[in-house]
Image (cartoon, rainbow, N blue to C red; front, side):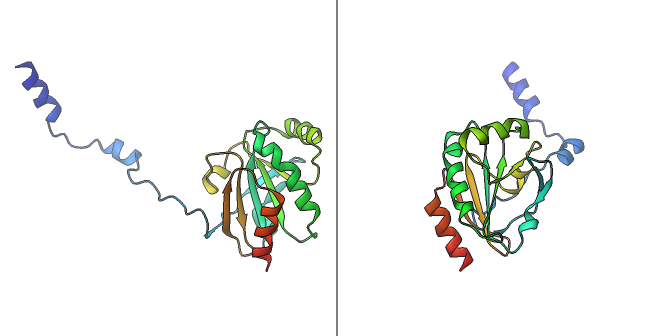
Length: 173
């Protein structure tokens, strides 16, 4: 008798709780493709506290890299980024390296000095707004955005100078 009573209780049809159904979205947004989508603008602070937006570089190819100081592949690719940037004209390809460990400028500067990197635009993202705009699961992750603001390439893992040159050549024409 107890089993039947439990079955009846748990199989009883109840109207949905309206407050719960309003608070929970049951259909997730479809995931973005890895490339060929319009890059969402964002504004983050650089290490000097100045606001930098992706749209500041409209009309230029932009490499958007998410990284942090405790990530070994991230550390290994930083000198490659520096070398690549030293090859660029003033209005050439831009690298925006966005720290995604919630680290401050005071924590990042000594790290950059220790590895000898000085000519990169490093941005901080203490509120992790970039994750919604440019999804990532692993570090480092690099998005390559063309002159029209479209994401054209995507890579999880370390990027080297030759790969950056290849992407830039394809997008700069």
